[in-house]
Structure formats: structure tokens, C-alpha cells
Length: 223
Image 1: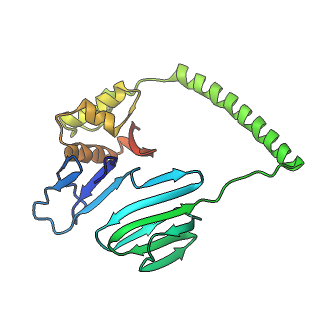
Image 2: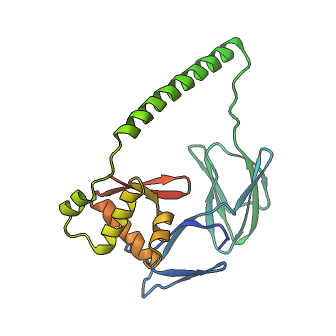
Image 3: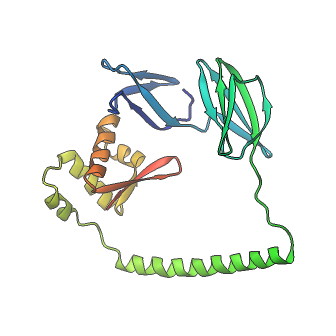
């Protein structure tokens, strides 16, 4: 694996998380009799950008399907793929085992320098300024009315919660009701990753928390 791996999730054929270890660039999975393993993660290590050109470099060890961003224009292929498909302006390559380099560009967004364009910019500027004022007022009102989540009420409504689950809920409440999964892992270092992953998903199923993706991380927020 690369040195840039985020939101790694490994599940078996029943979508149950399995334990794993990462040592340098090696991933070891403890399958415990599973006959199918699905690995999903996010990485910034496969692509780089120079001027307007994006380049992807990947060493493929098995037949792989690769999809580029929507409306991409390919300007370089190191080899000819086994197949090329285009669905709804998304190009998908079928790659055979090899070292691949693919370069592409994305369509630029531009505003014409005309009177109508200048008027549009002025309207947008006015709208943004007005929106910022409204957001500031709402933020101030929210700040003064903000209340700390009622943890005792949650515990009373869900008596089946475990000690660990109550600990995570209390941590979220003390952290303005929300935290990234990485922050929760740091707060509870003795809890295995898969156990914590299951715990958070259980709280989501119980409708105690919501999970929202922000950037490359998941944010857990008390309802």
C-alpha cells in the first residue's frame, strides 16, 4: 500500500469488518475463514498535477477497472487498455497487468469578460456579502442559544448501551456534540479499530449519531 491511506475499511462476504495490521507498506488481514475480502480506502498517492494536467501512475498486478473524473479529456496513455467505455461522460478503462501512466485534463470554468459578465459578478458579490451577514447573525443566535447535549437523557432512553458506547457518547458531548473518527480513536487508544468501527455504526443504527463525510474523514455527530 502507499504511505497515504485514509478511511480504510475491510469487510468479509457478509459485510462484517475483519481485523488487520499495517506494517510500513504491507497490509496483513486476519481472514479467519472468510472466502471473500473487500478492501476500500482513499489515497492521494496515485495522482499528481502539473499546470492543468493531471497524471496517474499505477502498477497493476491484475485486471483492473479505472474510472476518471467526469468530463475528463485523456491526453496521454502509456499503453492501449484492453477496453475503453464511456458512460455519462465518465471514461472507464480496463487495464491489464502492467505499469500505467495516464494523463488527463478537466474542463475549466470561466466567466466571459462582458458587461453581462461584470453584472453577474456584481450580483454574485452582493449575494455572497448578504449571505455572509445572514450566516453571521444566525451563528450569533445559535452561539447564545447553544446548549450542551443532554447525555443523561440519551442514557435513559437507551439503557442497553455498553460502557464503551456511553464513553464515546460522553466524549462527543464534551466536544460540542461532534468529532472525527480519528479523534475518537485517539481518545480511546485501547479499543481495537474494528471494535470502534462497529460501535460507531451501532450508534448510527440506533439513531443516536449521524455520520457525515467531510473531505477524507468521517465526522460523528450526536443527533
